[in-house]
Image (cartoon, rainbow, N blue to C red; front, side, top):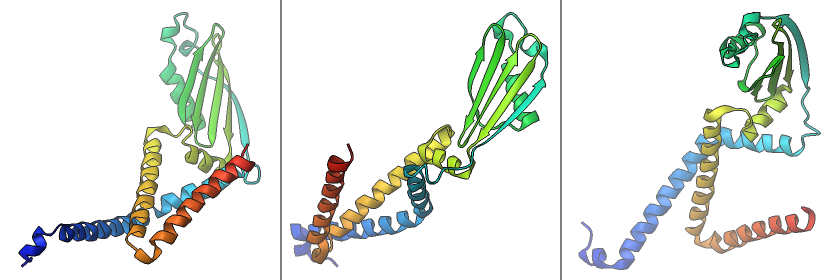
Length: 211
């Protein structure tokens, strides 16, 4: 049984709070680190490829296609009756076009549709009278693909959530690591000093060489 004197002693509850905080922080730090290992590794590596884009430049490949689709999809005078869905799916099914539709424009003589995805883009230009089209697809290779994933460019809402979750995990790992440091008496002061020194070095590097 817990001693009544200890229960009434504020120091007792402070010690209980410290032990529980240390235990929870250690548990979170270990398991969050394990869960997010692949995510942290991915964003670390792609951070390097982005920062040195010229050196890690992927091979860009562009292909061109020509053909004719159904003229009635595009030649109606009422632009609201242009078969946007049929056109979009035509290129997906026949030419394996990927990515989300980023733009769809209807001019007097031409319809254009653009698709975009990570490491990929496609553009089609269609004559409104005849249905004749030209399609180009550009792929930037694996490096371009992972770089776009890192930036969240043309990746959709789900991947945007992944980036937010990854950022949140990194914040939690950093905070729980800092909390654990505060519970290590022998390393507390030196650890905090090194943290401040690291922040100061980053600031000085930016102020001296970053402008």
